[in-house]
Image (cartoon, rainbow, N blue to C red):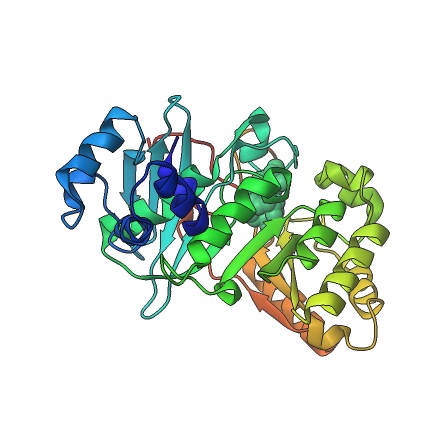
Length: 346
Ligand code: SAH
Ligand code: SF4
């Protein structure tokens, strides 16, 4: 058992089942999640008898080992972690003057097969356990000494396919007695697993939702994001409307601009019509984040030229749709969106 994947309540139950006083659970939770301890010995306010008991019971503190760490000029840092079964996943540390962000993985690989994404090229290997998701955050925080403000589930994997473990990890990372990252600072990005969007809307913990849209045309989106064949745009937009109605939270649509694929006038027109079609209040409730496309090996897709990206953004803004262009970070280390493949830097 990896103790990092337990909520405080579960840890308390477990501690009591070992006939230890309940308050020990709070101490251990704080050592793990606040002080980022990686061994029982570090937990100096616990008696040695407890260290021994945990070692005997093979209760794991399971700290991920780092296979590789590369830092870009802008200090964006990509970490490659090795899991217990020797699989590997990346996480990206995005430091900022005030608000440090971690982009974490939720699966090894991804089964969604989006044609423009390196992670999807080799299919899904497996889901990550909550402990493995949490430990990406703890390990980076420990190694960089940084306080983490924001989390984004935009590394390897489709978070809503691994719903239960992802939500468990989010709940634990949100606990103020642990890392304490506010729900408003946690973003789940999905290619559009419609039933899970409804489930997410009903969660007591209301995180930010980002939808990887990339096209507002079913025919094109079927090709780019194959899950669209199962959950077409009409259903996806309906789920988004319900999400905003239930939670009062804004939804972000991510749109990676690929040259001559989804960056034309007709593409823009469809996008504007779709957003406007979301309802009267759609302008306040939806936001478009344009992502400069990151070319991936084995694909002929090219990025839209920066001038066209700016033009696309300006035309959306003219149509009163709030639009931002994602600041590019880490592309030189293959740490940018869609480039994570569980490989070492060359
Ligand atoms: N599976 C989730 C989260 C991980 S992907 C999802 O698809 O939303 C994180 C973001 O990177 C998504 O918006 C995804 O569409 C985008 N992305 C994937 N490949 C990309 C590429 N080559 N260039 C730019 N963005 C890409
Ligand atoms: Fe998976 Fe997201 Fe990549 Fe699509 S874009 S293959 S859902 S990681």
